[in-house]
Image 1: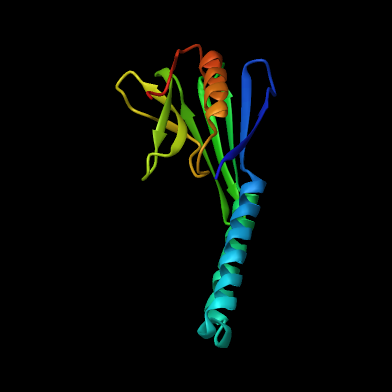
Image 2 (image 1 turned 60 degrees about the vertical axis):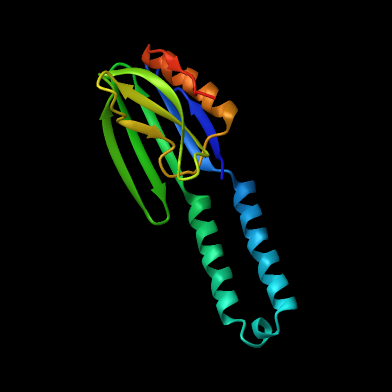
Length: 166
């Protein structure tokens, strides 16, 4: 699922990115689950006689959709403090972390994930370490968002943007 990105500038030396799950993709996932469940109920006699497991599946999917729909990642890049405040928020909880970007020398576009299909941005230090990869929990950025947000962060931090390798 893709991320919806909102950009704000609360102060001249700050940019704030808010990433949320794309609600249309959450709805498509729920529709997919309902179509599969409906097809199984119509085509498999055992499913009609004992629908509890399928209804449990639908319940789990609804729960996941509610949590995914409520989730957001907030990144506040503060050029003056040379830091980024990361907040991960959902119905399941909230976490906050303050990371230094003092040693960051580049913003790098990356492709990650078990299937190499997650478009991410990585802040890379002189030692090649990645103190921050975003998005963290949301599945992926779109190609346009990866490029525009990468350029914004790199420009704000005064470091180059390293483009993804094709």
